[in-house]
Amino acid sequence: MRRALLITILLMIATFSAIPITSATAPSGNSEETISSPTTWDEDGTLNGTLLIDSGSSLTINSNVSVISGSSITVEEGATLNLNGDVVGAELDSLLRLQSDSSLMFNLGDVAESGTMRIEFDHQIMVDAQFDITVGEVTIDAGEQEFVDFIVPLDGSDIIVDFSTFYSVITHIESVSFAHSGDTVVNYSPKDISYERASLFWISSSFSIDILGSFTMDSATLDGADLNCVGQCSITGSQLTGSAPINIQTDGSLTITDSNIAGSRTDEDIVAHDTAELAYTSSTGTGGDTDAWIRLLSERIIQTNGEDITVHQTGIGYGNYSRYDISNETGIVTIGGSEYSRIIEWMDGEGQVHAETGELTFTVTSGWGTFSTTVAAPQTAYAEINISLPYISIDDIDMEDNFANVNESIGFMLTVSNKGSSEATANIRCYVDGEDVDTAPSTITVTLLPGEVSETPVSWYSYEDGLKIITCKALIPNILESFTDEITNVEGASSQEVSWIYKSEAADAPLLIYGTVVVAILVGLWFYTRNTTYYETELEEEKRYTEEIATESDED
Image (cartoon, rainbow, N blue to C red):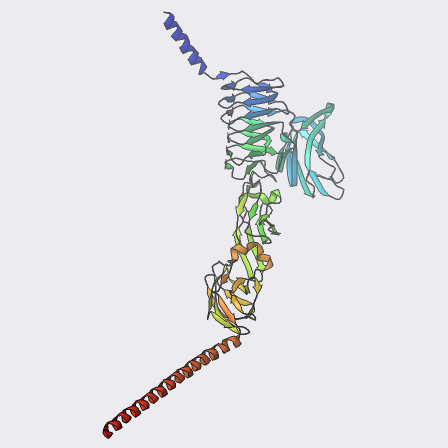
């Protein structure tokens, strides 16, 4: 029995632990609160302080929550915030930004026969401005004014206020008020005004929401928030007022569908940073001068393959800029000096999508020629672009002999090729032990197309004897020094060893040889003559001896 009871209790604990914990309303104390389990707010309340939704937990808001200015909500990675109710910041401070042809519409109903309408601006209009305001048949020039007053009917008729301005200073309406009988005043804040060809502008946010995990907003209202999507955000069928711009960080994403954004603190409702993901479908933005969304690069750095490269930019960024820059000593050029030049695509207030069509031309002008590369401007924070260059390779030196006479010349064939991708006219000089030598031509000039090979006959003169090796190398123009390893084989090519001797030494050598041969011949003749004479003498003495013997025999 006890065992069955224990099992029942354990099962009940397990069951209840799986049920989401519901907190009736938001914490109203000025404190730091952490949500560490599934939580739902079903009752209206006030959020005052710092709220952290811990990883692995969630908060669902189904009620109306008022957020005290300066409060914050942080959704950690792995946590979720679901907004199905209304979250409204306190102390909202909006303005209505005017265009040259803006219109305002009011109808207070039948409250009085007439009254005074006052339009207050955020600054005093300059005296020489063209700033005409028309209500019915009355037109007032607002030059040198901080506000204007009109007598208007308050009997249920529509009140239309038309602006016709030519004024370089951005102008906002701070408020519109109506005063009538009994000292009754009806005030309209900018967010309560109906308008055409104007836009709401929020000076600051009331509170912040940082999404590192995930955020869903469905058929909800969000007013006065600074919404930052580092993780994943999804907004459907909702109204955001004074909660722009929504920032989507590089690794974050935002899907917004059938929703409306009214009022932004900047010139755009949504800012997608770098490679952030954005899906904007069937939604409307603040309009007017305020873009529905932009894609903003954090920087625009181009790494080239050398310094002092001229970079001509055209059609860059939101402003369609054109300008010249030069790569620095590390080969870097920055084309995103301003925010406008870092905006690469955007949807304007009328719902039209635009994209940058920028182009970059990289150029180096040198003694070898002008080398140029043109590409579409990379739409990334960092890119590498190498200018097209030649590669002058000194391939071979083929000497006509291994011996040469001092003060005379010896010929050789110099083979040079262009292994690069650009045509070049290169100058080549020759050296012995690093010192210039006398050649004809003194500076060898070759013009080569990519892939072309040239053979040039060259004469080499030396004024000293000895064993020498000649080396030929390309002369690098100063402006191309940073490209040296990319445009030539810096070691060049070297010949075989050549023996240089004086001509008189060469002439004396055959005479010595000839003299030696003559002497050898004379010595040989001398030995031959001597041996022949000796032999003949021996024969005569032998003959004489024989005859003497024969005579003696006859006498006997």
